[in-house]
Length: 541
Picture 1 (tube, rainbow, N blue to C red):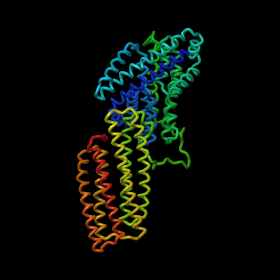
Picture 2 (spheres, rainbow, N blue to C red; picture 1 turned 90 degrees about the vertical axis):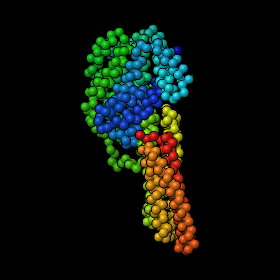
Picture 3 (cartoon, rainbow, N blue to C red; picture 1 turned 180 degrees about the vertical axis):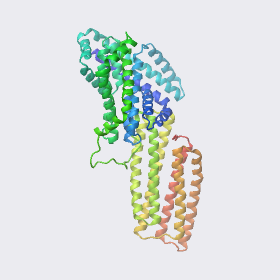
Picture 4 (cartoon, rainbow, N blue to C red; picture 1 turned 30 degrees about the horizontal axis):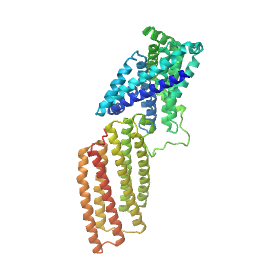
């Protein structure tokens, strides 16, 4: 029982340290991560490099592949791009095994001591992020020491050592064990840590460790498979590609390359089984990528065949959300970029709603009015989805600048939703005018058209300013909004004069005044968006 408690405690520290170090690295490299993802092209080799670098930063191939499933589900990454990133993630995850296999345990207390001191006294957030990396590093190695100490008494149990040795002669059992452990702890790095802990205490030779290692590489696919449940067909295909890649690689190594790998890693480190396992893990993933990279298109085709198109089933191109996905929260900096994209998309939907409502009133079109109502419902659903996502994102590992952006987006999303509401108000007024067969005077129609065009320009510039982080354009919106305010006052006075002159009837007059009031409010919310850009809290580059 003491062994189990010690092993679980060490595993918990190991996982916490790995996550803390990954969070610190993500906060430090948030902007760089976004640039790395932007390197994604149809070039599969670039995808491999991106997957490798991202995984090295976030310290988890499972997190990277889950993020890939999210990107594919959102339709912003193709399967061709995804296969490259998945391959690269497998190489990137080997860095953790290499770290823990090194005999640098003496650095753990030093790293913890320096990290704690820096964290306590640091004022700058960047310095605190470095402290988190050091603390994570120290806790990870402390957890590794706990696991080594916990399994050390197992040397005395002959039955346990014989069981481990049997995996060399019965590799299928070893594969199943590695698969089961990784599927349970949801981290191949953690299961590799346990394997290296056993090797460090002389409990398992490289020949018995290799089948477990192959099983761990298959087991790490469980996370992405689970995350793809309920996703689009392409997202499920991405998860299947991950499984296919690791499964084919494991079969190649188990039946063909195990012998050469054992000889090579033993030659490099004759007396250090922990280093042999870490090197075998790295060689497995690097060689697997080199072997299967030329066949990446075949893997994509196989995934499409395994997850085929269902007759009568169509992907919903008009789904509520497009760019955001809970799977991406594993990498907050990237998730935030996609939330900005979704917010821009919401802004465009609100603009369509606005256009349809005004065209409905100016063209006397019931069809346009109905389209406005439909778009407004879409805007409302987007608001709920984005705000819910922002709430989850606010609880993730974000640096200070990103936290400010999240706060700003809460305001922007609500402003866009209010623009949708005012557009709906105009559509309702249009419906009343159409049903009552009311007609505006020539002067009133001209004024409504002029004010509509000015407000539309103001709002369009606000969305552009946010998308381009263009402060100069945002300042231009301030002047445009002032012009809209003057137009509203002037047109209201003109209309009162028309009412007095009886050139416009009372019912039409009320609708006219309500429309220009809603137009002025849309302009106000456009100004609010512009002010968030001016504040520097929204950076979309």
